[in-house]
Image (cartoon, rainbow, N blue to C red; front, side, top):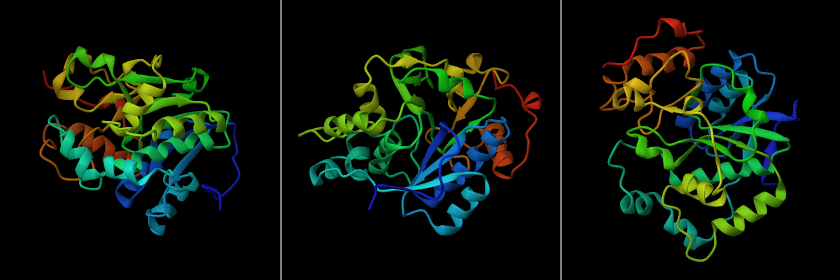
Length: 276
């Protein structure tokens, strides 16, 4: 049986792709899909999903225009799986700046590498906890591999990429090389796919920060926040569909997410500025 099982044929040579591995991330993907539909893109919108995603969640994604592609997790070794299990990853590298939700499963993150097996010429990957506020089809013409810096606290963050938004060119040879590098003896990827992709593409091209604005910028770097420039908003760490300790500080962003999740068309010009 093939590792990728699409429900239908591709309708374009280009696709926006996200990964969904449980019902919670399916909620995020539904809002993402609606936000993409409002940009007027004619690219396919693909949801790579595992068998762990329930049928009702898949139905919602299908109704929002997704091409569903069921995927297996990667065929990684027992040693690799043990090293990247949730308790090991979070125990060795605790998240001191924010809180990962309980449904976060680090090992699942590597399944996004399956997009290099997809039947498209060009792909833009978007994490399921992102919203696309303005058209980003221009990214299909960017080279492989482009990603925005992981900026959410200080300018010192610019040296590290964030894998929530990136450009890729599917190719089976690239995928085979990735698997060989990923699960080499003793391999350990501290921030899972993000650490791996930065290692695999050491000369990654930097996207403008506005193509992947992390939500913490709202209160850590308010001078960088510009609603008129932001194209992709990324809810790193805490998710807008769950209760969490930072909800009061992020209330306008959470309200925006809920508007997209409800199928509304938010007025971006009416959004408030971040607190000084």
